[in-house]
Image (cartoon, protein in one colour):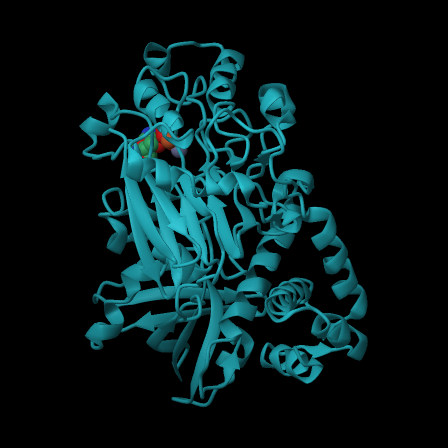
Length: 500
Ligand code: D5M
Ligand code: FE
Ligand code: ZN
């Protein structure tokens, strides 16, 4: 890449580039350069910098080499079975700065909350500022100084939302400079229909005009992911399989089906299955590995073992049967033995020490960004889906169509804006902001598979390997156990295998 192009691309995102930084990026091959530039820009914006410095680029380049934890092709031959993926070199990178695992600094004091919200606000504001508009983009202080009926785009955080006696909706909008009531007038049906989609605590932009003490909303603009084609990585061999919600230790864990799945991975299926299995190079496992203990009131009756260590031992026995040429990335969920509040750090060795020793197993936090075969994958268990579904009316069908929940998360570039319903830990930085654009967004938790291409991001909900529980039946969920989706990076196509 030419260094002028580097400067131009950075400029589009409101950043200057030190010449030495541009040279360092330009020296990489094109795809690498674009990836690094993207990372550098995100990192610079996160720290409110105006300039991309050489030292930042150097640091990111260093991280690249140390993060390259890809294992070498397997030297020892397993008897007879020689699938293509066995000879492939794995390409796997972890964005440790976007994973809370080694970065948790929270002490829970009031200052933490202040910096947490400030960090969220600033990063989401930066995303909103990239949205095109002919209007001036302003904050609350400027909005109060607008001429009567003067138009602008106002960015703020939703502090409150209420319906008036006359059937209008008023959103109390805040930023560091103050608060302003914004009116969704019932006289404007199109706008009033948007009000149920505005979520408490989210950072969003309203286009509109000042009228007396109010800002009259005419349109709502979310941060959004850019519109593009799903990313294809030409010539990239090795496919990516998605798993979540095994719930090992539960009476409902579908052991037989999972064993069949493990056999499939080892090439013991029919001809078509063996061919597909032989191309799998990566498995991503997004939480609820075991059922845990004390997660809900009557859980004890539904467990095979109440010993959490035994649950993880059983999990380990199973995951050790994943062939060692398949890279296995493992994140926790709300049933696992780490804090249940998001963001969650990776599982401690105390529970998964044996797994951790395996060269092909990589433990990450929740959420986590993983670069797999040239694709940026955002992995998240999906615990916040319950809050999204209960608080956003357009998502009321979300347990049956989890992909629409994923869509709203991407649209808002946030995994859980609403504070206070599910626990969130107020880290200095809001790890739930989606400021890198994922090629793939993988989550689970709702136990229902769902797939969608949203503006170029492939949304995958990988369902579950736990049978439908009485509780889920009672509340009307329809889980889809043992559906296993596989993504081919070369063609960006998904194929789903059913083991039920
Ligand atoms: O969650 C499995 C599914 O069950 C997921 O869709 C959430 C739902 N669930 C679990 N507990 C509750 C409660 N208490 N209310 C409503 N919905 C619930 P898992 O994390 O596997 O337990
Ligand atoms: Fe689950
Ligand atoms: Zn869950």
